[in-house]
Length: 354
View 1: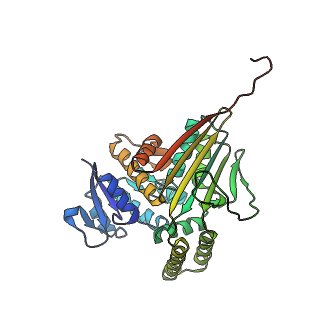
View 2: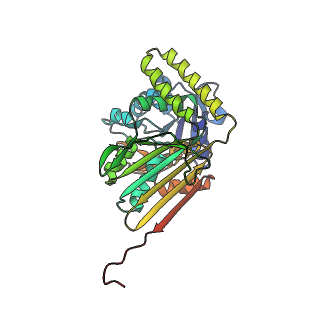
View 3: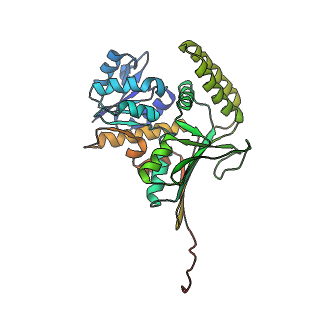
């Protein structure tokens, strides 16, 4: 039986990955301190080369669930790969791919919820619909993530992983003007939300790989103050050089978000829509939070990798590697609401047809 190493095994997402995989696989749990050998735990400092190399010796594949990806993932994957082991990472964006491009080693990146499930949904819809005229992806919710997740959101915004108020129209990136912030009702979303056009690098990759001429991505939030916090974080990071000062800024932002979410219901929804002349495909996914989805995406990617006898020796985004139907099936089994709706379009009769 192949051994799967999970870094950050006690964290929110890491513990979910472990919970799923340990049912059928041997999982080595990488923890920061106070390891319990009887529970297959090994103390590891993932940012220390010697400590991480020692951990990798016990594994056939490593999943990195330690964030923020924008700060740590390149160093961690370099070390894992130097031990001859493939690595799965939940984020990293296009920047991580560029840094890993010269490696002849299997690495699966952006294997979380957004990016991750988002790209897998768009790729699935592109295939199901042939060559669709348009793909629309709407996602978001009301939830409180951790400090590392907040950092990744801010750092990726600064790095322009996402392009606000942009869509792909007729094969090119265009501005989509938004005149005002107003809440609206989105089908399959439990609450009214603010909906912002937000084209990201994953959407651009889908456009390039599947020749989809029109792609619109929207990020939705329940409270406008959450959006303002991200802007505040971007401005603060641009003006601060010292790591300690940035850390304090992020802690304050997380505290503010905690007050915003409060005791309200936490949720996450994603709706993907693809259209062509004959059909409309709609894929709906609803969960209690995006963290749970991230854990399942990474775990399913890992299961495929350990059973893959001849994987391509290169860095791949999750949407290029994960079996969408398998993932959707697993999400259903784990209690996530998943529905695929197909509607035939009425065809206009040509002159002379009956």
